[in-house]
Length: 409
Image 1 (cartoon, rainbow, N blue to C red):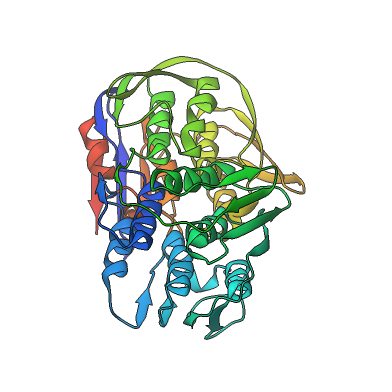
Image 2 (cartoon, rainbow, N blue to C red; image 1 turned 45 degrees about the vertical axis):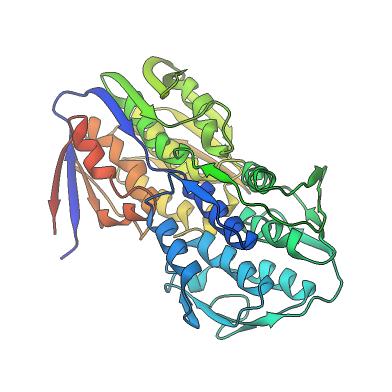
């Protein structure tokens, strides 16, 4: 029998303060950089997300076979980390992880002098990392329209190379804020780099030990923005968010200003209240693709017409997120269609106010993106434990603001 959680809200009125989980994007970068420094750094507010807890364990592991499970940053970051540190490891993951491409990163590491073999299908995990013999090559050209995680993985090891690295990014840069986050964290730990047009230059340097406090997660915040937009009345404070954030998903502030949520920054974080919403939205998610599911689900609930671009990378996430969204919005009398290559349009239909049921496709963001619709009608989410990947306390936090959360295991 499939595990489910059934959600509803008796009043549609939300009030309270929520301590969000820490950003796993920041935490995982800080963990890799701290490990590369070879010194003890003080890392505060590390994420309780499974991806971050997993990376902490694996960095300390002496096992030859390393299981990255379903964590994309863990797989990509450790591939580069083990290569540059000359460790011999077999790196594997879940069935879905072994279907997610890694060829761009492996080819780049091989150009730098890493010895890496594919154990099954060419271009995909599992990988056998056999060591590193620097060959003096420090210039790379890498496609930048697939996953910024490949680029971040290369950048973090760049100062360890005898000649540093000159990285040329080919094509449209996807998720640029994540690349800039990586460079900002590298600078925090003592490494200087330049990012001019499509070229990033990182000279040979040493990381320095430093103290770093991880910010709360703006991706997690997006679900609360969605709840405020759908609520009858709302006054929600999200703790630990910064106005000057490294995270690209802070873009939710501007998106939701158009979809009915006013953001006030405070010393504690942000205070969210309701405001007028627009009837349609045109948005390029190139810099914040992880927000796309939240906005698709929300626009369906609000009856807002959505046109979106910049979502190509969603095809190679925990699931094919575009296909998953297209299937799930059908249950709400809505269609999400690719009207021209890379351009998707969604026209919401009449929402069925009887119980809505959504599948999660082993994807944490599918569960959390559709959960706020419980403010409009009872919602059943299948396999709700997927939230452990980034926001383990999500269901408990919903209960704190008056949601009924009934688990059927």
